[in-house]
Image (cartoon, rainbow, N blue to C red):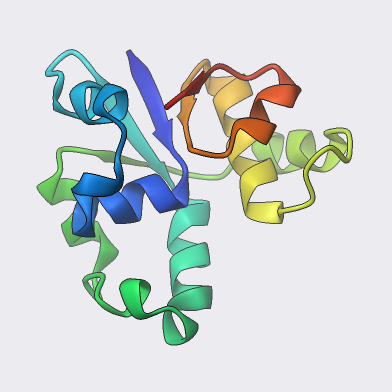
Length: 126
């Protein structure tokens, strides 16, 4: 399965795996899963790091957390950005809108606890 992690799922997988559902935990451990972390998650983590005690515990070099878990960064393209801007206003979080657009365009399951994102028609795994 090809997966795109919402920022909270990436953070929890690195720092607090007990927060993950059994389904997500299994998918992340499945050697057949291809797991992506969006560049927008790096931005969100760094933007919020000073205000969030859990994010302050994340490695300063987020590449370390991505690669240690066998994950791959997914860059944000102009196509992703334009698609996110064109989404209907069902969800206002700009980080989540980018993730939805990336999942749609790249054919990925979005791994998130935020089931409101399923209203965009993107497959959600939790």
